[in-house]
Image 1 (cartoon, one colour):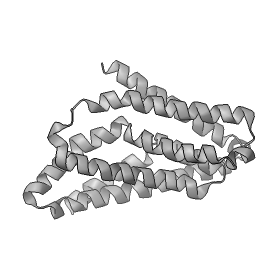
Image 2 (cartoon, rainbow, N blue to C red):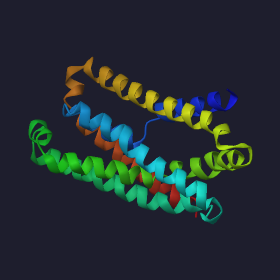
Image 3 (cartoon, rainbow, N blue to C red):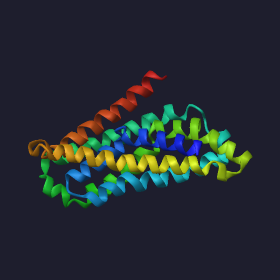
Length: 204
């Protein structure tokens, strides 16, 4: 029960804290693509976390401890590129035209996957928190670690969905602001990408 509560607490904090995935989801919601938005928010992290679970389980000792620093460069570049693309499209198309754009939709899913894989926090979590718990599970039996990951996943995805719904609802209270929600989400995405690069440079 203790591991479940620890995992749930960490998951809720992570889900409520704005991330590139939240902003990509919010930009899709702004275009009226609710299903695609929540697909972006939930499915790519599940895929990435599933892969990193296997990497951590079988190759934990061989993963460089400073990898979060290096992936920050990749993460920042990916996020900035997508934000820039979204802002460029906004200059040349209406939100209705962008809502019908298959390219923008597929790009959002692809970038969500890459952004999650290249997020420094993802690697910090798996190498410093989840890794030791998996190592403990190897000694005591893997069922010992299941409550932590179940609580973490439930807390994170539940809090993430609630967080995006609250942001969308808040924007809906001011119709003038809601019209610019796509712009705001992509500007915030751009700033997050820049913060990744700044963090990587300062950590050298």
